[in-house]
Amino acid sequence: MKFLGHAYRFVSNFVFLAMVYYGLNFIDKYPQRAVLALLVLVYSAMRAATTLRSFYFFQRVERLELEARRLAALGGEGPAASASRKQIVSDVSALRRGGEVNAYIDLLFLAMVVLLCVSKIVTN
Image (cartoon, rainbow, N blue to C red; front, side, top):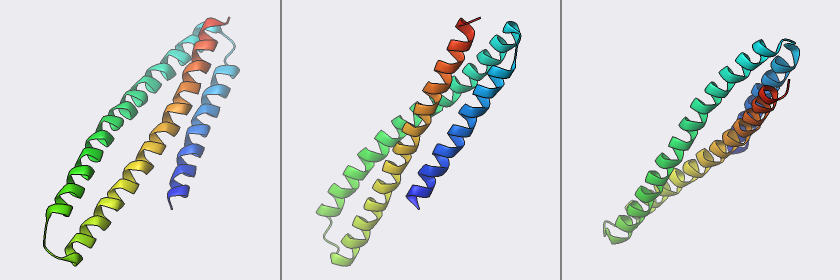
């Protein structure tokens, strides 16, 4: 299931990149192409800021994971409670790692979109 999530993120970002590429290549007049490139740059900057903010969130979740592991080791409520806590912590850890991979995929494609837009603005 994680692979499908990563594949979906890859395909949706690739489609966005392809739309930007074809949109910028089919516009003949430079001012219109520059305006479109600037609008796409603004959108990409907003998405990049959101993605970078999610890394801050993932760091906080990682700290909570470490604290939960420490507390689970200290708690003496029995093996069943400890096993269920360990399972919850490992599930959260897997979700965090998956979210980080998705964020890296987003940043990769956003960087390519930014390079494409800047090249279309710079070239006449």
